[in-house]
Length: 157
Image (cartoon, rainbow, N blue to C red; front, side, top):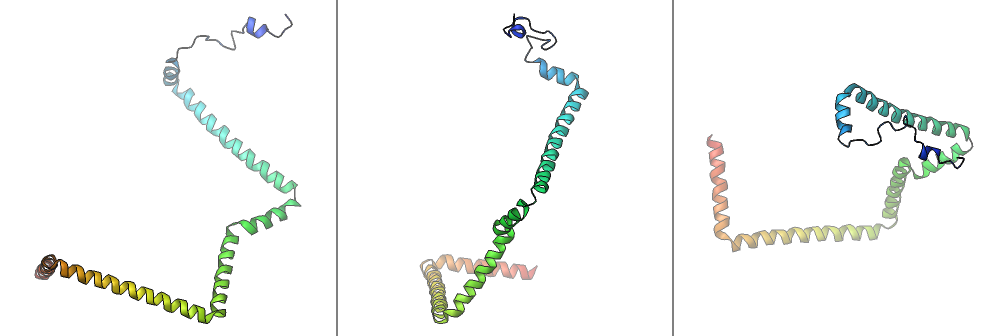
């Protein structure tokens, strides 16, 4: 039979010694062969670590082999890496300070308007608090009496 069907027609018993495995047998076998299972697991971890180390070595070799590309890559990383982000932030601060100096009158108006808004907000919050005290007088009196009592007890002890 030269059709390449020999493995299917005459299966090798050494390739698949148990043609009908029991699904519960895997866990039982693992429990019975704990040392073998631990060895297998440690071997699998070692293979994964070795694969990662080989990948790092391959990258390093490619990096050293393509020496002319290294400066280009470094400049690209310098333009878009974390150091470039910090440099951009510093540049932005410098530009902001320069704009502030160039447009002093506008900046002075903005700062004054911002201060005025903050003051108006503070007054609104103060008036709201005062109005709530007027509306809920009994609650306010009770609160003040409780705070006074707690303060006196703390001083007494």
